[in-house]
Amino acid sequence: MWLGLVVGSVGCVAWLIRFIFHDAGMAHAAVVGALIAAVAMRVLNLPVVTCLPAAHALLIANQLRRLGYAERPSANGQHFESAAPRWLRWDSNTVLMRRAEAGIQLTCPLFLVSKLRQSA
Image (cartoon, rainbow, N blue to C red; front, side):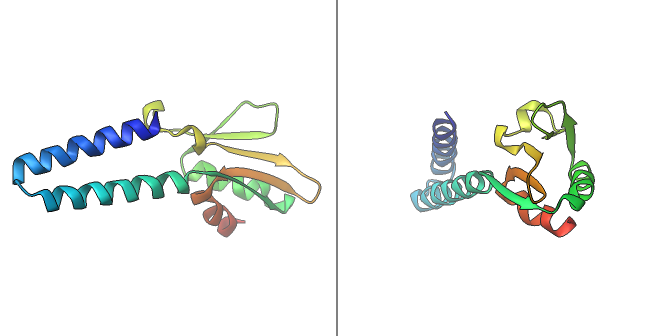
């Protein structure tokens, strides 16, 4: 569904550019740029798992709240979800913080890893 939505949207934009400006080169460049951006955006939202020291759990939770995440009830640990409206959220944009042997195990989107490691 995601791919269909992206291809359909990009196709409509390319058609509009070609129709309004009568320039096939501009439409082609817009399509290529939009597809590269869509793939990059999806890659940055892929969930990854990382481990951090347990002493940093409170700092990470506070950083997530500052970034606009709200804590939701969960049986698996602390579950954070974006506080944005539902239609603006990706399902992969959730953060799960669980206790592990050496500290805490953090499952979050790739774009958040470096930001959360800086706060820890």
